[in-house]
Length: 368
Image (cartoon, rainbow, N blue to C red; front, side):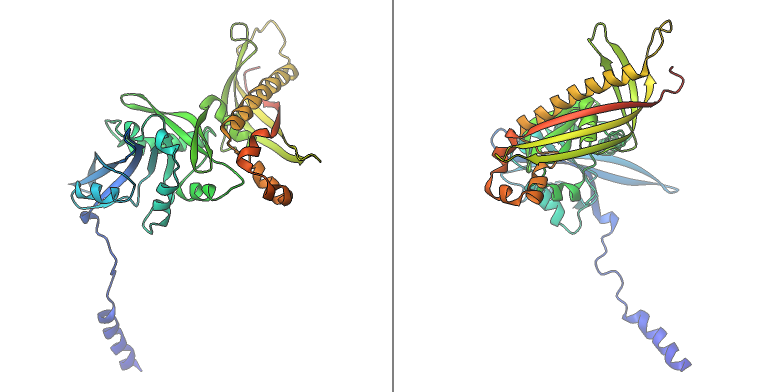
């Protein structure tokens, strides 16, 4: 028995072939950022940030990135053109950020998402964003230390934690595109200086097409709260009353409670009521210490101001034909007969959305 076991142990290592599908790092050029844009003549341009990793010895590496571009009538073949301009095999399987220019996004992002979703080597956690102007303009920002794609990734993760933008990656966006009863929001980036990129807000979609309308970052946190999405916190600053005589206050939302109710009347008119309750912690509130602070009055003023802003947001969604609340999904689930006989793209604009926001201060710290 021992001889048999010994013989097997000697034969098995010879029969093992090892990693037949290995891809050595030395033979590849990694890509950490990609952008797509539409040219004036209707063609598609792609740009990538190709990483060049050089060993400095002692476990230290120097990372430099290069911006490379290509142009074609369609997305097909862009990868081959880019690969031919870079030494080694181009590897976009770890692209952290995919930026789509707003003009191209208006045509639809489905073809680009399909390429990444179906590719077995794709990174399904890649961040998908819309670039104000062109995506290449954002991707071409030069940073002294970290490559720009890494800086954009950190910017997006910070904005997600503050509930300024929704958490979106390749996998989530693909599923959003396939959902006929709910439209998506994508992070909206802009280049604000030669070496700076900032979050402008969220881009509003109808299906896989960018509507050309967006919600600014000072309102996007409230929109996400109305959608029942709150990350770690949501810090806001607000002026209660007029800009000249108003009172400024900054606070952080600690938790929310949202109730969304879709109703259909006998004459098939659709209404959507959204009740949002926000528990907040005051960060700053300049005050006149001679007068006593009326927290109940502040709660009321904040509630009225946020209800007003919520109505502005829902009006923008209706004008953009962006069903971010998933009202269509509610209709298809609970009123299937109505859903089957209406054209939701046309009917959605007639929906009455009635938001009500109630604010409750639960903590003031040392402010008052």
